[in-house]
Amino acid sequence: MFGIHDLTLFVVSGLLLNIMPGPDSLLIMTRSATQGWRAGSSAALGIGTGTFVHIFAAALGLSAILATSAAAFTVVKLAGAAYILYLAVGMLLSKRGDGVDKPLAIAPLPLRRIYAQGILTNVLNPKVALFFLAFVPQFIDANAPHKALAFLILGAIFNINGMLWCHALALFTATTSARLKLNPAVTQWLNRATGGLFVWLGVKLALAKQH
Image (cartoon, rainbow, N blue to C red; front, side, top):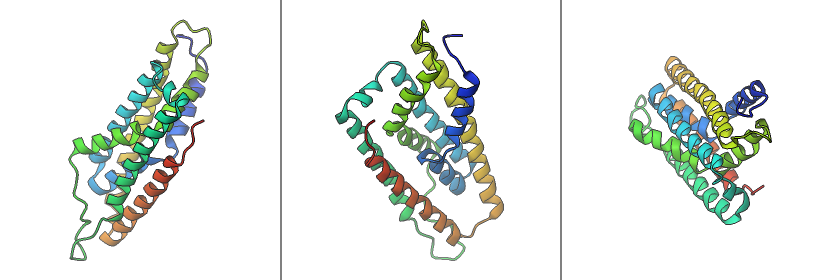
């Protein structure tokens, strides 16, 4: 239907790819651990919105510019790396309060700002755009009459499945954090460890090469 083939393989592959850790997963886990599952879900919704931006751009052929223009790829890549490093700095500079039992001095963000963080973290990663250009067409028949429609359908399926995983991750992280009741010192260490991972991911994105 719609020129789509091997749909089951596409769904399974998509789920496995979504489970792989990256900037999106780390953002969801960090927000869930520090502000609860609603914050994590807000980040997940932002990431899902950003993914739809990539899907529509790829379906319309806009993402092909990133695949063919070194200048465009570099601009988006560096912007994305800078934003990820900006998030990392905030985590690395977080401090505890004066008292032993005081929580981290990370100001809780409004859900709308966390949602915006999710969008930017995803949209400013050109690798996501190139991923859709490389992965999705493999499941569309060469003779499909409406390739763009087939691309949008597969992209929506991938994103919905990804959102299910992201919301489950947010709930699991928030629940686990609440049950463990980590003291501020351990929470601060985890936050800085996550910040360190964001630094690595930001540098990795900045050094990424166009394929």
